[in-house]
Image (cartoon, rainbow, N blue to C red; front, side):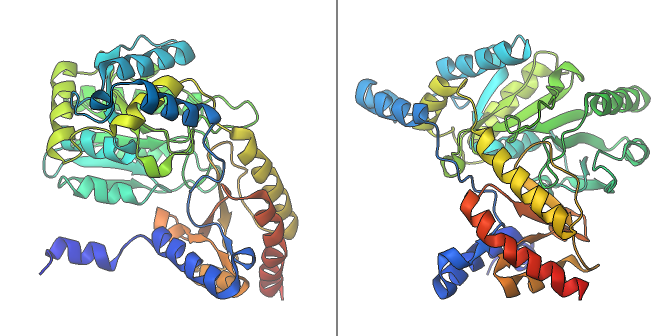
Length: 395
């Protein structure tokens, strides 16, 4: 018999994943060309050619016992050094290999750092709308998620409520920018104000509050928007990164944590994260992929592919009367549902073979998320379906 905790998790399993599976069933029934699946953030751009070339070269030229063997739980030293060097070149930081821990994607990294930091009952603040799996990652270690209400004007964080909800139990704050599901980039002014609030709270409570920056979409930013690198604004910042989106490698599960020297108790945190990576069962990040991203750490993301999709979908949907904030990054549109019940709206959209995700899954009811990391021609084919859906409500 499964645990009581898992009973609840199975019952309330991911809506996004359920839609993804439903989309496959609908494609078999109606034909793939007639189903418009905007549910899952699964990149449609192929991995850059440098990734394939690196994999082939590694398999052909490097020692197989090294490529496929164990290494330090934090990852290969030369790969961690390459990642640190790539960050230093882009963000004028001063990281070394000791500041990097290679992880099983950003999700693995978030679980590692939460395992490292949380005692039972510790609070972790999240800003709605947010990636719903954060709730599970926090509860995995008996922490408590404290949700800041969404600011639906521009989807920047609600700092007034944030300042009011920090307490002596606050251990960490998770931010995600560019954001899933809104595509909004948190401004430098916003990050500086957030840092000031956390510094004041640390002084007031005599505690350490860690800012965890979840950054799988960092390279997917448009129109020249500036995406602040958060370690430069707040000393107790830890970065979780994934190559899933930037190099189109979601199934390969490869990422890293950045733990700067400036962290309070840096040596203890780095050592504990290394152990957490092992005892959580990851042991180490995938060896071949570590060596691959070590060679490809400076390869640019295919952002223009998604920008083209963004411009088409945003322009056409706003013309039809849908309301949304234009995304500055990532590959999502967060649209106001055409009725109060976002789940009912998603069900009605299925009449036209449109699969979109309710905002309730991101703690922001009344909205729906569209993942536009899809083929451009599918967006064009889907536009009449969006028009019919809008017309049904207008009628």
